[in-house]
Image (cartoon, rainbow, N blue to C red; front, side, top):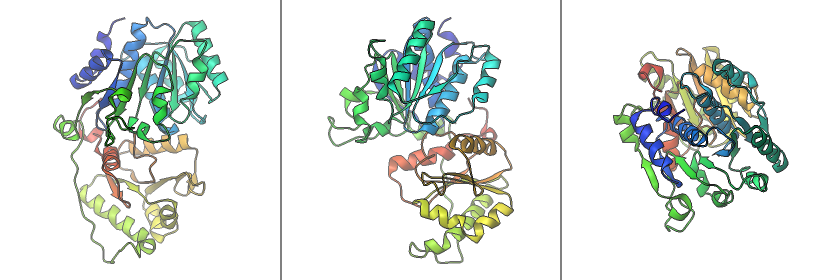
Length: 398
C-alpha cells in the first residue's frame, strides 16, 4: 500500500496540507469551514498509520465537545475503511469522554461496505480502561485511535505509561479552544511524537510567550493558511450575504423579551423570500436558555410548527436539552435527525443554540444565521462557517 491512494482522493490544496504536515512534527493548519478539514486530518492519520505498516501504535484526535468527537469518529472511520479509497485500514477505536450514546448500526453499515472487521467501540474516561484498550491493540498488533475531548484527554497520558513510550500522533480539532485557561496545559501533558493544531480561526495573545497560538514553542509555526476569501475564490464556500428584516413593531433590547417570537418569525419569512423558493434552514444564536424558553412559549413557535417548520433547540439546561418540536432526544439522536432534515431540500428548519453547534459540527443544508447576541470575530467566522458550506445545489464537492 502506498501514499498515492490517498493523494488521488484529495484536492490540490488538501494535498499541500497533508504533505507539509507529514514533513513536520508540530504546527498549525488554518482552513475555513467547508474546505475539508476533517478529510485532511483523516488523510494525515492514514499516512502515519501506513508509514507504520498498519501495525500497533496509539493515535489521538481531540475535539472540544462530545458531539464533535462523535462526528470525527464516524468520518475518520469511514475514510480509513472505505473501499472507494482503497485503504481498508483495520484499527481499534475508543472514545475518551463521558458520552456513550452513539448508534453502532452507523458503523456497521460502513463496515459491511468495506469488509474490515468491526471492533466494539468503547467509551470511558478511566485510565485503567484506556490502558486495557491499548494493551488489547498491542496484542493484536493493530492501530488504536482514541477520540477524546480536551476535557478528558489528559487521562490518556496516565493510561499509556508503561505500555508505549509516546503517542505517535495527536490531531487537535478546533484547536483555538486550547488557548483557554481550562485547556492550555493539555498541549504538553501528553507525550507524543507529532502534534498538529487545526482551526478556522487562530487566537493569539499580545505576548509570543503567552497562551495564544502565536506561541511557537507550544504550537509550532503556521504550516498552511487558507483565508475565507481564498476559499470563496476556489469555489469551496459561498460568500456572505446580508439581508435586513423590516418589522411593523419597534423592537428594542428592552422589549425583545416580549417580541422574540415575532422577531424570529419575521426574520424567517424574510430569509425565505431572499432564498427565492429554496426552503429556509436558519440557525439562531441566542443569549441563553431564557430566549429559547420564551420562543418555545410564544404563539409564533406553535404557528411555525403547524406550517411544517421543524424547530431544533440545544442547550446544556435540562429544561431544553436536545429538543425537536418540543420533544427531548439524546444528543446523538438529535444530531442525527438534524442532519437527516438538513439533507431534505424542501424541509424548513430553525436551529437554536448557545455556543454548541457554532464550531465544527457539520449540519448540511443550513442557509442562513440570525444573530441575537454579539460575537467576537473568531466566533462570528465560526458561526458563518456553518452556513457557508457548499450544498448539493451549489455543485459537486468532496
